[in-house]
Length: 99
Image (cartoon, rainbow, N blue to C red; front, side, top):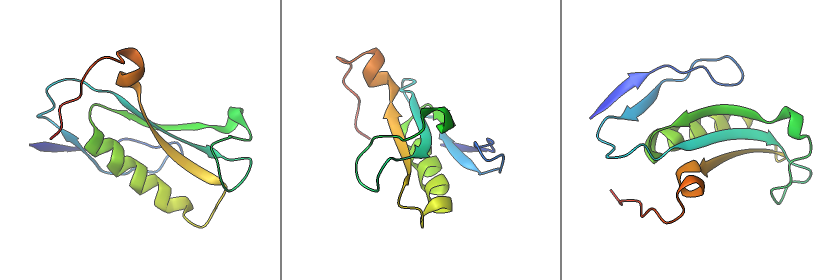
């Protein structure tokens, strides 16, 4: 059901991720991080310093990457990790199957 891979994140450390081999479609998710202008909200202060953690074919590995990366900066209230459902931007009418 899953196979392990070792992608390199934006800080060049290796995190083991699980990629689902049973995804019916490639519903792409992007995980990125950046520093916010304030501790609440989603206004990123310096767009040039946003880093991509990775792109994932389904939600489970994207969530695992988000959790793994966000635990590195848990004490910084201004640092935020985000999962973007790119497939919803590319095909907004596409209904995602719930597992």
